[in-house]
Every structure is written in structure tokens, then in C-alpha cells.
Image 1 (cartoon, rainbow, N blue to C red):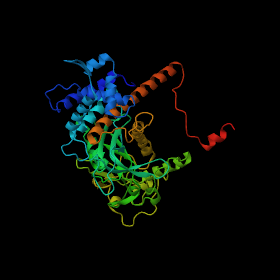
Image 2: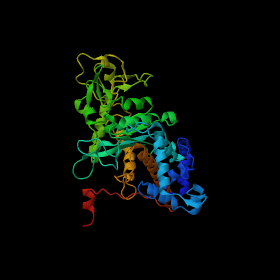
Image 3: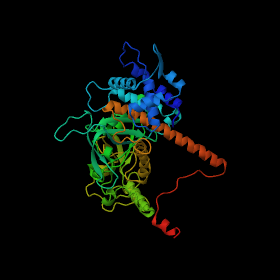
Image 4: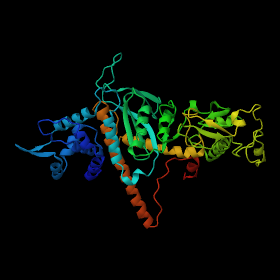
Amino acid sequence: MSIPLAVLENIIDTSGVPPRIEALLPIGVRHRQLKVRTLFLGMMLTLADDRPAHLTRVHQALTTLPADDQARLGIVEEWRTGPHLLTYRQAEYTFNLVADALAKDEPDGAPSDALARICDDLLEASIPAAYKDASAALAADWTDVETWSRPPRHGTTSCADHEAHWGHRNSNLPGPKGEMFFGYYLSAGTPELARRMTLTSCALDPVRAFAKVLTSMPAAGIPLGDILDDSGYAHRDAEAWAIPLRQAGAQLVQDLHPSDRGPQGTHQGAIIANGNLYCPATPRTLLELGPLAPAATPDETAAHDQQTAELARHKLGRISADDADGYHRVTCPAVARKIRCPHRPESMTLDRGRPEILAPPEHPPACCAQQTITVPPAVAAKTRQKHDYPSAGHRRSYARRTGSERTFSTIKDPATTSIARGWCRLMGVTPLALWLACLLAVRNQRILDAYDARQEQNARRAAAGLPPKTRKRRRQTLASLAAGPP
């Protein structure tokens, strides 16, 4: 096995999950040989060996352990007729008991509160204490998980998996960039190690479902930091994503949807654009500035950064933090000595290296006539974020969101564990969520093992006077190809 048995046992024991589930299970007359702790251990052993999430593989993983471990874990017990080895039907029976205990009385495509806590505790237990406070940032994203059930026939709604639903996924493969699938949405929040997850039917909004998971973290003693999300989250109504997270103490770092970029109205004369308030005389070309292209050259990057820096000079500066009701105050950029404006005579004494308003409004609005204005929480509620969009600071901060992409790429890698259709043949939110929580916990251990191995290698190279080993650049430019050998 790739992960030691003791490590997996420590994760399960630290989570405190088995005793809580055992308390929910019915007590029968006959003694149940397979305990919940051993069942979860078998599930993690199966995933650690890159096997599919089948109960037959769980039974195989448990029954091939060394004899001492089998006796210790109750896989082999003494019965009146002699030693009894755990059977597949016993594994299936115990798993069904666990799934029924954690499922909702009336399934609706969302996990029960008990199931959500079980998944949270398993992921938290898979992260060592030394790494829990390494970063408060979380990269949020969702991906597709197909069910084993066939979709309903045309014109019908019945199928084997009653909680699954039709959803949409994007594809980077040649051909159409989007397609329909039948199953669930898996959402995860990760700085590098997966820390939170949830699984919902495609009939439900994954953004609203994951917002509930993230906003519950402060109550568990885990403060929220930066939340990195793409336009799929940022484009939702503010009440669905942005406002609940801000109330929970998070700061958003997000890519804005094209429909949310640029000027989006005014507030007391100030232009609302990209989550900020700007001087009414700000050049339109600066307000409509989009994000930097991924393949931009160094010269294009420098020019883009210069434009965003000039745009920042026209932004109304915040002079207070949000109060208990979410209100704050901002001041004119000329009062903040960032630009020169005839409406603010004292600003005209500034050096000419600052932008100058050549055509100020003939009838100054409140943002120009007053020293400060009050900004209610409803203004730019959806697009307001930590960094100015699309500045260089925002670009560097948002680049951390690749952590969520790496998480999903590792659990979809055909070379190891791929969650493609057929990976798990159990249907419903509860069985799939339990398997996926175990999978992400195992994935966290693989990342930690790879990190520790890399640190040991760097230490050996440093002792030998060598620099840390870096990955070879894969991207080839025209200049590098022309400079190469013929």
C-alpha cells in the first residue's frame, strides 16, 4: 500500500467519526463483526491502492492484511465453529447501515447535516496540525461526478438514482466546449490540501450549497481568509455567495464575469466599476480595462499594469472599515492627493506627474462636492473584493486558485484514482459523499508525502552545495526553438 496502515488509522481516530456513527446504528441481537472504524479503514486502503470505490475491493483490502492486523481489527473472529473471516455480505451490510443512518429521511439531493460534519471531520483529520494554519485562504471550485445509473429514458423521470440530475460541464478536449452529464456536483475548498467539500445533485445550485459549508467554518474555530473563486461563483446573486462570506469574515478574490466588468451604474455621482467607486471623470478606456491575457508578453504585461495603476489613482479611497451594518466611507481621489482636479483647488498644487481632470463635471455631484460619501453594503455587493480588478496585485493573488484545479486533476487522473463513471457503483448522495471524503483525505496524504520527499531531497542537495531541483520548463517559445541546435 502507498500509505502506511498506521497513518490511515490515525486519521480515522483523530476525526472521531466512528464512535458517532456507531451511536446512530441499530443494535441487533447478533453481534456485528465489522466495526465502522474498520469499514472506513478498508475504504481508505482501497483508495490508497488506486482501486475503484467498490465494496468488493474493500473486502479484498481488509482480508489481505497481515494476520495480526486482521485479528486486531476484527476481520477474523473466533466463532463457535472456529475462526471466521469477514465476508463480503458483512461489509455490504455494514456500509448500508452507515449510509442509511447518515441519509435524510426524504432525500432531496443535498447531504444531511450529520453527513456534512462527517466529511468535514475526515478532511480536517487528514491535515496535520503543523499545516492547519499555513494559510487561511481557500480556492473554491466544483466539478462533475457522474452517477453509475443510466439517465432516465426520453420523456420519463424515473431511474435507478433518484437524487441524480442532469448537469453541465466544460471540457478542454477537442470539439464542443460544454456537454451535459447525469450525476452530481462536487465542490471543494483547498489552499493545497482539501479542507472542505460537499456533494449535491445537479438540480441544486453548487454555489449556494458550498457557501453554507464555508460560512460554518468560523463556528468550528477555523477563521476564513481569502476565498478565491472564478466567475461561476462571482456572477451569482450577492445574497447567494458574496454577502454571506463577507459576513463570515472572508475576503473575496475573484474573477469577474464579463457581464459584471466595467461601469455598472453610479452612486452619488461616483462610477461603480469592478467592485469600486471611481471619479466621474475617469477615462472610459480605463474603466473598461479587462484582465490580462494568459499568453501576454512582458511588454504587454507592463503596459497593462501601468494602465491599472493609473485607474487606481481615480478610485475613491476608503477611509473607514465596514461598521456593524456594512457601511463605510470613501473620499474623493483629489482629496486623497492622488489626482489633480479643479474642483479641489488644493489638489492643483500637486506635481504634474499625477493625472489631471481636464473636463470636470459642470454640476459637481455629491462625490465631488463633499469631502466624503457613505457607501452602503448594497453598492457593488456582488463585485467588491480584496484587490482592485484587474490589477497586478489581483492577478498574483488570484493565481493561487490553481490549488482547486490541482485537487480535481489528481482525483481525475486515470493513472491513479479516476472518479469517472463506474469508479463507484453505489448511488445516492450519501454513499458517494462518504467515498469522496475518504478519497480527498487519501489525496491529502499523497500531497504531504510528496512535499516531505521534496524537502528531504532539497536538504540533501543543499548539503552537497547544490541548488534546489526545479521542474524543467515544458513550454517552448519560437525564440527558444530558433536558438536550439538544427
